[in-house]
Image: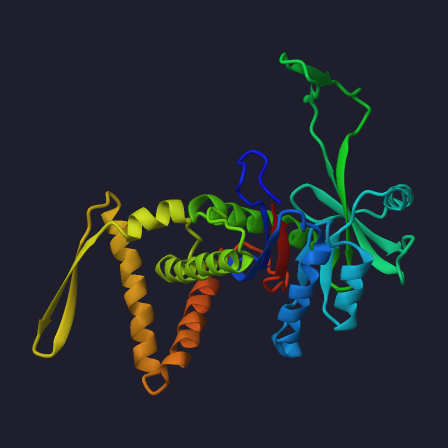
Length: 342
């Protein structure tokens, strides 16, 4: 299991378990480069869920089409865990789309998507399951690049007749009872989780350390994920309105020079900012101080281990208050997202 482009360097897969929308890593497991299938993520996923009491489990486990198979769905149903997975476009799935297409019971679910639901039992499935088909009209003026060995690229323009409509579609399977509108939003929210995964790899150096000893790789990957989570909470405390990626937040919040002075039994930290966005940084540091003062004022009697949950609850409350008022609530708590990367 070596990387063919870098001889001698092992090829690894990072099976990652996310808390969706808040972009926090619940756990990561490093396995060999050939263990990319969902069945290799399932054992650790079951361990994580079994450790939680029923009231502590995620509202939804969400995954791409690698998880939309009988083994994963049955494992989730055995423990009454709601899930939402994407299905591969097999022959049986395409026949379902054709049948629902003719019925015409499509419902708009915002952002250009229409949705319709039905029941499906594919070959190899143990039961009939709820499926949701999403479709969106594809704009005209399309072009396709031909794939061949010639160094000269060939571009083919796809000019569909005016009366022809082009659609992109996705089929989801779920045992949850969310509305069609909520299903569409949950499906679109996957892109935000992919952004976090890209941030961890490119801005935090995830996967940059590899060795033939997988335990050392696991320790390194989990240490990076833990520091990433700490920084994410810190930045959301400083800026609850929106999440800031490390490429912008680290230069802003780590560019100052600090000096500690002590007088009359009190310690004072004086910060000298060198960043151009000094006023914004001052406002962010003020938010951080308010959060720490809140914990000191409301929970001075708590042991140290209990102060961290108190701070997290404070940060979450600020995030909820800062949410845009025009966003229509769908009653969707952050889903749990397992995914893998080569």
